Length: 636
Image (cartoon, rainbow, N blue to C red; front, side, top):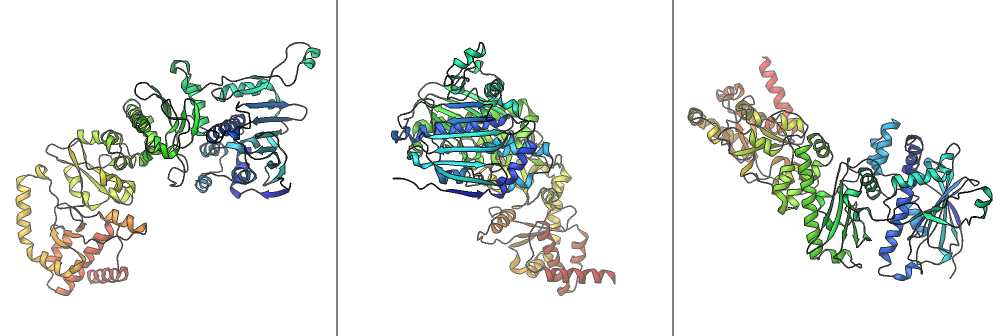
């Protein structure tokens, strides 16, 4: 069968054009990383073929010795990186080279500031990959053929990075990919073999495949000419870094391996290298990134760990190895107890995987706990990037809830600072004598939480309250109910009972006030009708006239709003209306003899309380009318 050769010119995605322009002009101080990125891609291609070849050894095409070759041609002004990995079909070239196959693209470009130095870091977070070639090349030619396809299915891709690329079907006898960089004027340093060797030693020494370059001849010119050009030598260690002793690995080597495995530009925040022996044997090398990836909240994005079996790559993004709330963790796990032909289906029901996962999660949580104790500044940096993800933990991982709880950080009324820096242990240490619960308030924003009228009595008595404004907080509270035998209690739900935090005189005064306002409570119930489930006096307010409270076991008003905004049908619950018997407006209302006016003013207080909670009025126009009439009556 033959394939008709044809050539076409196509346009890059708009995002690719922007990215190319930014990289060429922003990464001026990091030009050498192009070689690291292209070698990493070549290594990944070999890993993928090794995995697919487990089920179809015909893909190896009688060549299972993987290698990467870096060749320099000073006369042609080119550097060529060649691999004999999986290769690509024509459609795969279009999908992976002509577009950015990575979610989070829109958010990435929204984050760009126009400042080249700052944007260089953002590009690093996004992942530069193949397009880094254009940092040093004014033209890039890629030839490739996917393993298993005939020689006539070769593809040639070429572009000058100016918005278009050409695609042509060619004959290619060998599988794999070759990338030819036509080095731009002024970048001649990258045509020096010793310079490329130094870059490989710095960034790619850990690559498990041999990276080959021509031997550098020693002697006079005549001897050099007699030296066979086909003679290559390995210029990297070509051994699995994770299999080496920890004492033999430098900090720089750990860092460069992270950049390879995570396709990140920045240094990792922390890492843990662990070798387990016993019933199940495995090695793990796990990293915490410095910054959250742009696709951290994308449900369709693949996250996870690279899985190896006896140093043979099996699969990427093995989500069975790490729970979703730790999806930011990067690294590898190499098992000695799994079959080489392991599949995702087998992983789901494998005792060894369950054991490896449990052990790895414990190690990551312990690493974070140690960081929180020994380096508060570093942990604050971690929490800023990944705190909201960690809050998903108690709802997913019941086994480790206590350990996750020690990692949680919150804003509180202790400082009224939006920075989430207070641990639950610190909160408990500051609890008032006789305080039985950990109090919290949830709201749509930090400002709304901080200024909630429900906090008034707590501020007066100096009782600390957690200020929760992340959407994930409602999910957290649905499964996380206590810490160190102290229950978590919402200040907006149920009847307020401060127990020993109230003295006997206060309780007696409250009972007397309740009797004095019995008639007013009845009249307010009649005025509000079906809008409320109950009306009662409150002692949680000191400066506001009224507030709305949900039942002890009802859904919080904030959660109800979140679900409704997400388009979910939520059975509406009626709030409890509580009013402050000492507020001037309430005292004036008590003396109101006009029943109609009493009803109107009561409705105004209800609507105000609803707005203070972040709720929406069913009839804003009527509320405005009532307020205007009230203001006019005051002006008379």
